[in-house]
Amino acid sequence: MGWVNDARLAIEGGQSVQVRPIGGSMRGRIESGQLVTLVPADGRDVSVGDAVLVRWKGNFLLHLVVEIADDRLLIGNNLGRVNGWVSTEDVLGRVESVES
Image 1 (tube, helix red, strand yellow):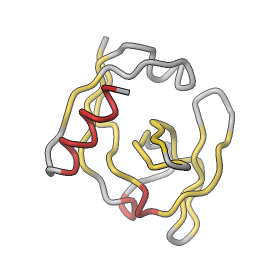
Image 2 (tube, rainbow, N blue to C red):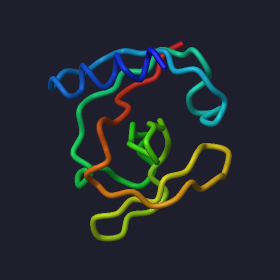
Image 3 (cartoon, rainbow, N blue to C red):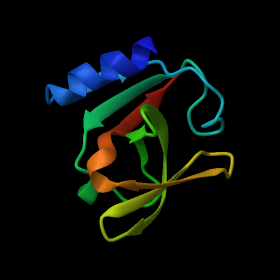
């Protein structure tokens, strides 16, 4: 996934980045190919409803924070599917804006 690698490199370097994610799991909030600005984020500073880039089972997802419990975040997509719990340390970035 080219956009994921671009995002990871920028965010790990402390920079914001614009990417065009491909996929349908965030349909209605982020359409496939839309311009998304990601900013570095500390998982302890995100809120329910934030869209975040997270490590998930050896891969990466751009999904929503559905619930927060201590140092864990429940991650799901915009279509109602819940993936599961991740550590706040698994958050790389947060969506700051979405443009067409």
